[in-house]
Image (spheres, rainbow, N blue to C red):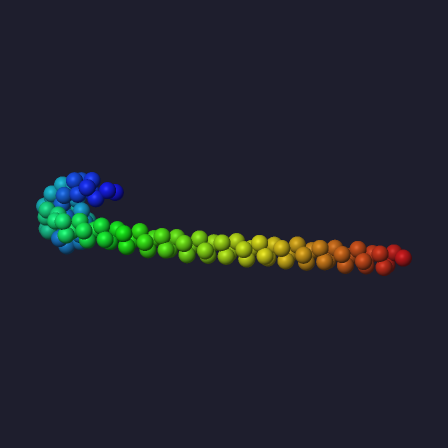
Length: 103
């Protein structure tokens, strides 16, 4: 969300848990503390910094998950390939056995 829009939408913050709110209430909707106040530029800056850090961490996690999925897929493909090769070898052995036994 654009920071300008965020600032206009969420004007209040809980001093205890940091939950932003659109309306000033007596108690925080998240933690129940009696600490809801007007948000300052420092609050918004801190929130923006945490958001960027969170996005970076999520991106890193997603990349790691993608790598793990690809590695798993490659392992499955190798196992299938080995299975097919084994089956071909068995079929070849059977044909050779039949040929040797039939003559």
